[in-house]
Image 1 (cartoon, rainbow, N blue to C red):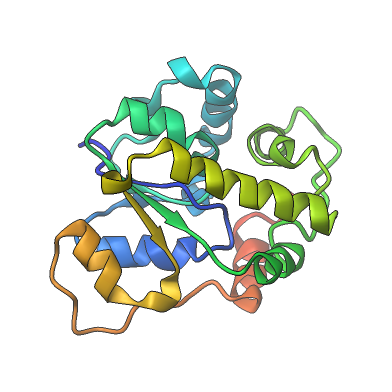
Image 2 (cartoon, rainbow, N blue to C red; image 1 turned 120 degrees about the vertical axis):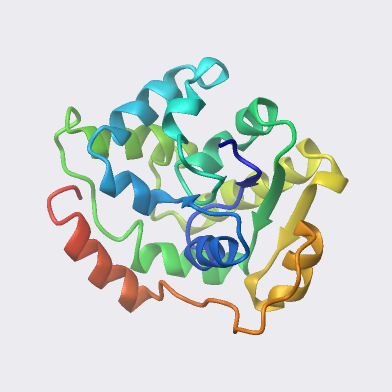
Length: 208
């Protein structure tokens, strides 16, 4: 199995809903940060990949997966697009201020453990926090990084290969881009701030 779809959007842009949508459309299993929590070896794999992404063993990380969204992969969309030249790319976006507020209530809410050698915090610092110069609560800075990332994706990925997507658009543009029929079921909408907090407490109580 090889990746046929790569998500370039940062976390909290609807990536969990997109994961479920892709799986419903036949593009699963779909990798997501939630998959990292399930595999104790994954944080070390991602940290190793981050040290030299141009030569990372993506096949090991994505074995058994057909698509990937969210972090950690969003940081390396360019390398993944090169490694999987037939894969399409989806950039999920939402209003920058709404996105920032969502990060502060969820993924950037808690400080990581001070133990740099713990695999999960070490991976998150390298793969995510370095993007923002570890200034996770600086609104102007974080939003500027977000907007610059989205602009780079647009400039890097060929237009025919890229869908810039807001999940509020629903199924039509996503299914048209992927060349599949529109399902009769509603578009998934999951991982609200409340759902995120409950899931994180259950899955990773000792990792943040």
